[in-house]
Image (cartoon, rainbow, N blue to C red; front, side, top):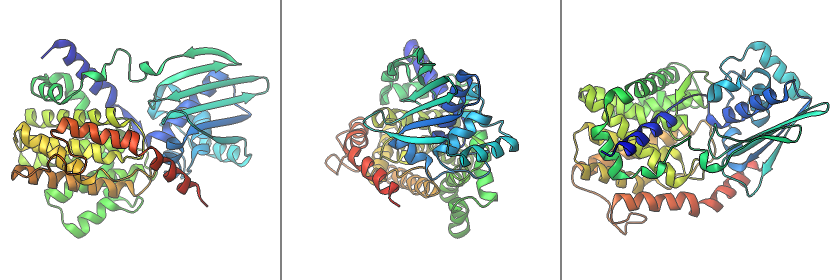
Length: 422
């Protein structure tokens, strides 16, 4: 494999598979706020948070981690300003104390934090402005949950970066296609990815177990095991669902994300881990299946964008379906058919924000991915002309990406309008 392409694939995995505490949208707000407080140098008298609709949508219904049960944009921003550590990025709230929570509640009671909608901006955009007497600061996060595009202090621009740098310095996501991904899966040196993948499995499995043991949200994961049994097909759905139960409802344990999402990070890895254990495959096979699952999910999100009206559990489950097929030693043809079958089935699931029901969408999507593999293994695949399915899997991924990126743009706006109705 070309060494430049190899290095890019490895760098993409390293960039994408990072820890995050809680749902990434409220954490991104907290991160921006912690950074703005750092730039300001003193505690602010007032905070203005301007967000794109997709950010507000994904913050509205989830509990901010380490917040004592607080929800919403204001709580994320104020807690980030009071107890956040900007150096920790997506784990910025990991050191919050009970005193920080109490001070957050007191600040919120003053109504000194306002939220405004950014219209006609980027799908992922957060601007936090702070004021204290004659001083001010501004931090803008755009396109990626940790990319700071602009920093200002007292009206002076300190940092101004273009969107092209948002995916990481020197990264070229354009190298990804199915040929590249399959080549990388077969040639990657396991010592290059082992640490990254071990952390992903360890973190995500731990929060899934927490979600099963305790009552979070609607307890989708535990409900599946109680009423459907605990065979491999059920466990593959229940574990990522339980992890989502926990993280959508305030659990302070970190997860390792994929494509900016903890739910997607759990969906790409836990079903693969369940099947790897069930099939008793070699460590070599297990790691390569995890690489495949992660990269297939990332590749789809390049076409879809980080945030949209398209549910990320679908793209992530198509990745895990590919990984499950790989564990069964399926041919590339069967693996691609698994991806196609998954997308042909559940690509219509919409994202109506981060909240408890995300766990159910994960379970449904992973169920579809498993059925997609079983169909493909028996020689059945949806054909070109079946809805959005095209003549090959590469083109099908692109057509689904167009659906989510372009076709669902107005859907996204309508979802946002409905969610804001009282």
